[in-house]
Length: 466
Image (cartoon, rainbow, N blue to C red; front, side, top):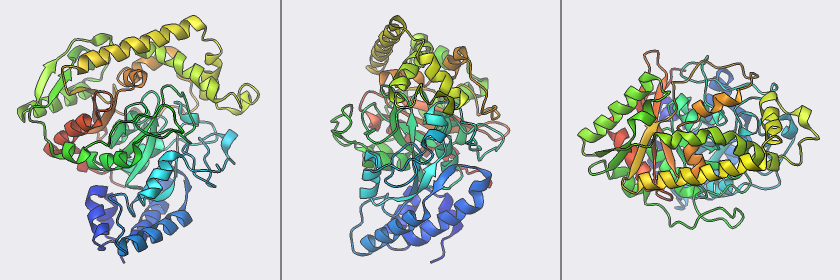
């Protein structure tokens, strides 16, 4: 079966019905996607490992099951990919570090178990910054942004954002400790959900900072992310932080529209330190939603950004715990950025960590208070459009971090869910993005808001010319 090339740049929502009806072969689709990876990814660098043999075996299994009447849902037979810090049995899981270059886990992460049970097809493992911080090890090249290859593709889930935007998978997994689902989604013009802390099990996912880490889906539409989240979420006793929420009713949320949706916005928070083109795209989006029945609520909580200055201390101390088997005895094997984080962790005293912990409590209470009177809070996806790719070995000064993560760190501290989606483009063709933040466990609200905006616009339908 020949696969129309336009299907490769389509969404899961478009393709899944064809697979369900037997009009599209999962094997042919996987072969076509593997061929596209071979042709396109050398210019993008989004994959560290392509698992062609595994993908084709899974595609054949899916095809046989569907033909036999065992269709499991929209991920069945769908080619997806995994960030390369997610354990895959007997497949390299490198965390983009030479310390784990030869590591082949003996088991699958919980999220991989769930994707496999849903019949998804795993194309391979995606590039990232070393151990999911914000710098690359010298032996690993940064992925390139498909919209403009000289520009940044985001932080640690950069391979995930680039592969999804370049149509080298239909969806993928990213992780987010300080913005690493949201930044690559924003920079690459795709949709990403950072779920409520504990909504998705992190068992078998190498931690950056265990108390801040989230794992979630990235895809080319809100509906696709919702379909992936429905498979991924749920209690897992192997991760004691996982929640016992009932399954989300995302199908209803996707079609609920914005009539009566209460959207909170703090203009001072959204404009301070923000590129004017980013802020204007956000305000235009809110105006559009209001014109179609949403209720806009003016808020005043610019102190929401205050927590960003404490993020680095928490991340560094948590990372020390996660790397106790490697640091300090293998300190010289780390790249400069991650080595600097661990070194910083050794300087964070008890008083500083306690102060950061208190700030987490304050941030959580503030967001709870704000969200008590609204359905979602809106703010930029990140402060600027994707900048030119910086020197991958340049160290980010500690005092530069808070400005970068001012819109993302609050929900890593508090654990509230967030969805990032495109809401425009710059004059030179780079994506712009906004995010909706919701109450703990209420992913349905952020999915509703994002889907309502998608239904009114076509930003999510645009694809980079590759």
